[in-house]
Image (cartoon, rainbow, N blue to C red; front, side, top):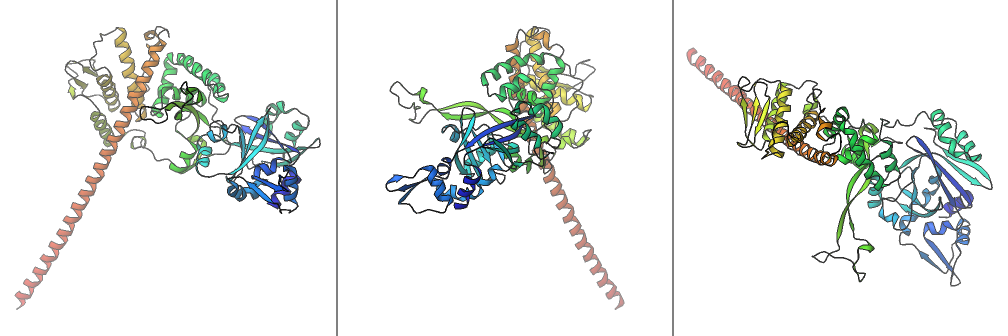
Length: 557
């Protein structure tokens, strides 16, 4: 403790420390101020001398000089953990540490008004700051473990430090610089800070000085949505998402949207909008922790997280109490739990490195082998809610397939290509599932809506399973929605399409797994039978040889 106190007194007390860190394509600054009286509060110790509490400044000086004889001590409940990580405190000014510039997603911090933090490279120590007029004052040091560790990994994004600079007595000194990212040993960063020209740092340094930063996914995005995400303006975000639906009335844009649905079928269409707005090239996303634990992959340092909506449960707040100020309870006498959503960080596979991700059987070949087609066909048939019959193309000329609501069966034309058979089958199963008792007539608005939904589901599911979908067209989309005037109906259909596609993909995946398992069991059984037959044959051959030997002996006699 003496060594850490002396380091704090010599290096931090009475100084301002500026953390320059990378946030996407920008360099940002976190300004902090370390005072003499912060130290005793950080370590959770308040000595008692002559019946009175020792001043925080005197406590720092005493500890730095090795004076520890006090009448009594008041200590924090977390003193044990604080002491364990206290020797790591000097690491907070190392550029290999990380910045958390928004702790609002973690209840533990928001309740005590802690807004920012520094995490050491070894992820053992966290120094949290309380923001006062844009300047962070050190408020707590804590050991990173348990629920806190999980929350830091899952709920917020750490950001890479480029350089750490200390201001003392009007002079700026560099404490550390990230050599992996900054080429000139931080000289230019220091110049801008010294001349109070930090606002120019992004224009003059990002392109010229940083050449090793992990590439960010920079596909074109809806800037309004991205800005709303960054500012955490959920009201504006909802409005931008609603307005953004209009862009998908264009057939080519709509196909891009469906492409994303085929990759992210488990996500709501609004989350798919968010993903597309932030990175149109995203293919597989997961949280920081999920990449690490389930996929054995690590998120590349400097990667900027994508944000999506995630469901949360929370207790009713003070404003939800009854007229007597008592907590509202449900019919079972328990506190009412409310449901809501919050933005959480995720990362695309392109932002990770590690163990190779296994491919599905339908992704292994560019052209699906016949055996795999048969498996996929059987799996899709297994999901149908009605019987499927093969129809003669000569009797139903120009018809690939149909669903008959009155008789509850699907007809699929013989002789079509594998791709066309799969797409038609999915299209008609969607009708049989969503439009069970349809009375729609060819050409009317209900018919166009139902065709739009079935064709969209067929596109998503076909694309997901590697079936060529380039021949799809949604040119009638704008006319069906009256050039966008019926946008609410369009939104409703998008929700229906996403739900049906997700359900079909999950059912087909399960069916494929069962067929694969049955085949493996069957192959194992056949192998056992062959082995047994060979063993029997071998034994039989040996018996014959013995008998022949006996016969030869008898003949000699």
